[in-house]
Image (cartoon, rainbow, N blue to C red; front, side, top):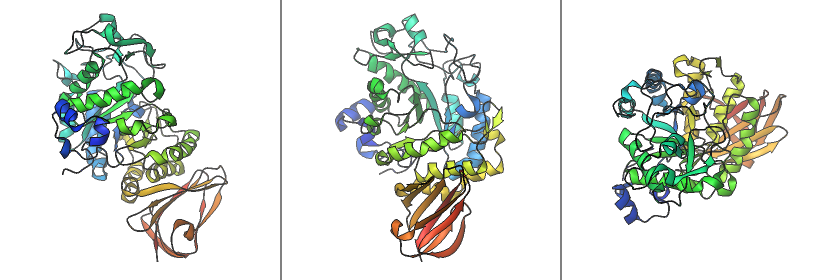
Length: 448
């Protein structure tokens, strides 16, 4: 049986469908497909650094650096975020009624002025091929629904006798982006439209789809979430489905892992301490629902150069370490957001510490150990011993102490500092340390 991060999760991929139905629609051998995304995905996304404006040249530059600097540590998902189909996209705002590049069946295409290799109907296939040759996976962003432009033109839906106006739900719109209408999944041809979109992605060699305007409000959008899931199965190509934005409704916590491999637990996360502090509770809330192939997503890592080159991250060095420690002990996907062309050594070291990544990728039984007086502790099982993450989320220095017996360990414990990659002394009874405001500590504990 095949193994690895990118194989299909047969249960998550087909939901309640039978193996016979799956084989008939996808052409893929059911028995050969283990879990898709068995560990939290790792990669890079263009949003934090390029907004809506990334070009093919910029993408290729970042992909080369990613392959060289980050791929050896496991970062292998390269994603072009929103508005790649808008020729005149210009920043973090969305332009009402902006013309979009689209084929005759309402499927969005890369804007050739920004992605020259896509000309003559080639789409993202040439860029995807380049990315794959670097050893990376290729991802794209897409909005929920069908382009309003397609509805205005009433284009035919590929492989059907219906047209865009027959399946569009013009009452279902995104509150922050005016490109799309929702798809009414009760209408004939609705599933065929989504199938056509994901089949196009499969033809391009897409491995990862970030689908936006999906997770909120989940109760309004669950049919389209299921439709995307079915369309991936029908496409014949395994693709991780990442739902955005959050906060995903916890009332749907038993639904979302069946249909997506990642889902956002918050709105867009940026380099602001309050936003980081709020993620502690959200990650705790979603902790019971995390499992191989299903990852609550605390969003990208806004590190390094951000906002179209206008500024560096506002997180202090302590806050940057706290960010990486929390994402790792809670096993959130690790998706770098900063412009890799300006990545300094400190940011690279933060992203590529092998012992930190091992916690994110290989730990188990991750859980909150304590919360008290502005202090939070998370613990997880290691292949041997325990991982312990300590956080000071207050604005004052804190002395932190925790008994080893509360971690299921004996009184004498070998302590290794994960961030420093250095063995400390054997400690007796309890671990004690001092933490600056917004700072963290990360340890591997084994019985002496």
